[in-house]
Length: 233
Image 1 (cartoon, rainbow, N blue to C red):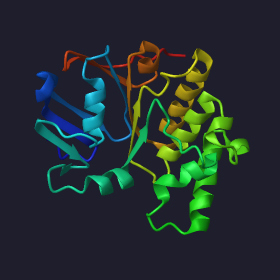
Image 2: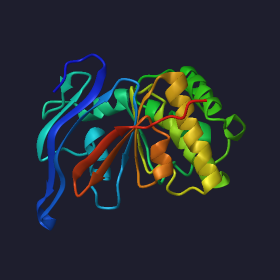
Image 3: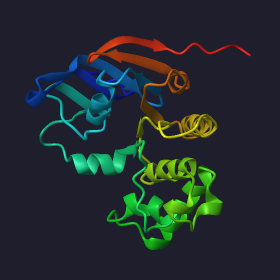
């Protein structure tokens, strides 16, 4: 565990076992994620990357090992719902937009129950929908949006409570090549403009290479952890 202020998230010696299937999904995994870092976790199906992302986002607990966020240990006494709502944003491959709400209303969902005045909530949602280039689709229902547009709204929703950490699970998995490139550009912009800490899980080398650092996994273990080389212009 690190108390370095530059470390946002740290996991140490984490394992995850699924007794029913006699499977060890994670096998003594350790690494830190720095404040403002853009990390990709890459690996084939069954490598443990999605399980790892669930543990990083506190959606699942490890069988053993430790997890710290901003220097604080995440343990049985931690209010995980409160931590996620104030500090962690999620982007999923399947979007999970509510079909009866407009794009602007979907962005506001994480703010419900957080005590936001309605006017401030709407203003924040408008700021975010513009940030992802979807202001002209504010009143559209999800079924009226393309797949790529739905993902942009889902990304805007993930930013509603100004999280310090954004986790993305195969964010381009359902997208065509051109649309996927647009989403990667959006992630790069969010990382650059908002200094956001971003961790994405992917099986795509192209998605991974958009990050600053790539952690490759196989059979529940870290196979490599390397910085991405950038060409000099």
